[in-house]
Image (tube, rainbow, N blue to C red):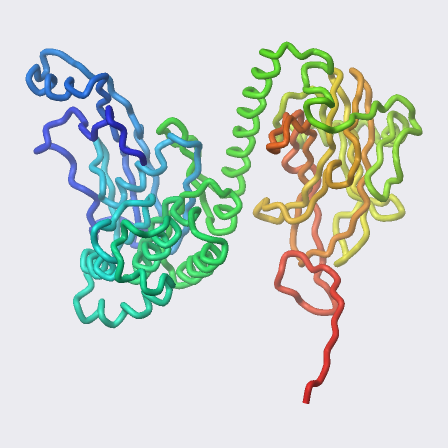
Length: 494
């Protein structure tokens, strides 16, 4: 969190009555509970002028010269031992404040925090170390605060230094470190105390790719040892990969806590809806109505193609469109069933919508159990409510709804499709399934690229359009999500 000149940590309560910081205790009812948060709130006083702080002390309760900002509002949840829980939400939602309260670096305005076991926290960059001390001195200080004695620190020092990998900079003041060096040292020190509860707040985002991968491996190993982990990140892929459950915060309130795949899907959907609103406001301000309120080709650099002829389109091997015709073979009850199922997991403006999707084999038969590497056809039928220019995209997601493979018009070098109101079209993607065995789902989105910064209007997103499984590879078990064909050359050198 950034310290603001007009923001203080005052809570409007007498300091003698302020709650104690979180304490490791042994009277939590269930032995399986590592962390319990009850009705936790944090309120700050915000002053318009710096001198108002002094004047407020003189006036006391007779006059209020500040306004209150509630960074957290009545948060309650509990985490079991060995569980990894993610915390997601937009900037300013209270994520860092919550972790600082749990770590004990902030005092709550109200509520209680109960923790079992040794806690180690890797908070935002800049927290925890004395910038005037060397890296070596900060390691000793952090380990001492965590409860290690001199012998234990000496025994672990070389391991910490090797993990950080910053060489001779260990004997230089921390204030001379780059952000990457700082987080390397901070992470190495945080895990060295072998905590029972580890708190990580977005800090890994500043490390280089090699170190981030190393940290993820370490976190996985800590999970296997039964460490309880709270993990804050804007990288929903990392949250999905690490966390069983996730807490979604917004404006200081807990909107939802539950299975990560469901919470992340809601978060992504709401981010996309917010992006739609922002883009539509910009478009309205430009008063651009030439293509139904969406940017034209001159703004996106992409040439749309109108689909007015049933025979229009390219070969289906690369993704083709056919206006009207083929979708009529889909029975009404199948269309109705798809609409009912999609209604529970769809979002977007609705200007154009997916009305049917299926996965078939080469003979047109639905695929629910696929062989490893099997060729399949993804068939997507869409209908426009108003004139729209868009791309039809799909992603195949694993059981945690993490995208594994996918395609869109831009990747296929296909021009965007334009439909008139009530016009329908079909997109056919031919691909294969070189996937490890397991359950998968098909995610479909209809989008219009807005600019070169990868912003897009989301007309329709169906999170779970089709569900299927991939059977085990009969040749050999492989331990990656996707297996691509390789060429192999083996030579005996001696």
